[in-house]
Image (tube, rainbow, N blue to C red; front, side):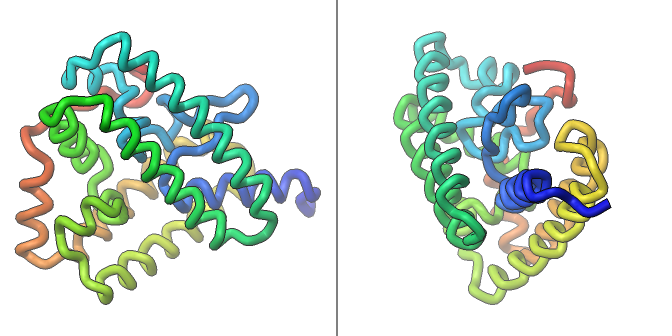
Length: 219
């Protein structure tokens, strides 16, 4: 049965947001900022919401309150970006990436230097190869233009699989296990694109090993 326009629009939106591996919109009846959403932890801000990450960083209730304020702001900006983009998916991608980076930059100003350092380490650990697309990581590893092209191609191949998954029916929660499998494969394939020196640097950027809670076992 062909998809109706509304359904098609929603699936396109989900695809783009998944493609970006970024914070997704908090739609009615669904929270894309927190676990068990597969999109949680894709930015520094959303990773900082994890219960065990908060404990590791020793963030305060005051910081948590300011996080909530940032989440409200980013939700509004993401909604505006989605509504105003129309079919310009490339433009929306660039806009959302800029929004995410801006809010990450704003959030880390609330933390101490040691907290920022550890949060970035946890970000690399949690996201694996996906972190290569994060500007800070790409700059630290001196990712070449050739590598960027290969990273983009690998991501696009993964995005096609994700799109096919959504088109088969269901949303992020319904397809969670399959999404997690695709994300794990993507992380591995992206890390293979690094040189030995970059792999060593990438490992160093992870810091002391940290155990994240399993999806569904906490906030």
